[in-house]
Image 1 (cartoon, rainbow, N blue to C red):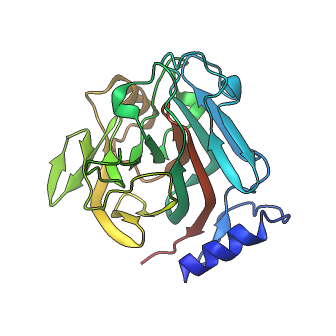
Image 2 (spheres, rainbow, N blue to C red):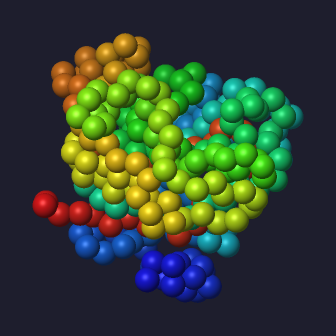
Length: 261
């Protein structure tokens, strides 16, 4: 049903209806209007909040794009574009694809690499030169045409999680997904239930699950948040999409609020 709905939405083009003021329980609503970046704010390393440096993030024709055609060199300008809503219990779904060539100077590991960041700190609380928000990352990776490379993985800048009953401190953990080569669209979804279970899905298949996200007391940015909050448990936060030096496109970005179980 989702695949059919996605095709219909893509064919119909962006809706002219205004976005709701908050997510709706049991109903999918758009976070991205397909025309412009209304409701989203860029934060790029070494730039002020709201400075969409060199038009890194662009919108039009139903697609939110990460672009590097105006860059002479990537120069460590890791970026994220944050949605305005703080969310706790929800499902988020979108389609993504990698295109073109990586920006000159981008790190090798960032080839066809992006992410959906969830439970993010507010971008106003980030240091000017902070490369990544404290958050959980649904890591999106594209294949190189030859080797296996899973997508929908978990990375944890400034955070830890519990997996299989034990605290997991590994920074990036591979999912059980297929490899997707080329410039094809891939469907990603994440189910977030506050500070309880979180699940990643790729093309409708569950690929990783974890629980009890918490601030990493060994990380300086996380310690700053811990001093403010007084509690390392993380049950809510902001959503952002990542710019890590390879052009990537997102479309059909939708969220549905989840009620109590």
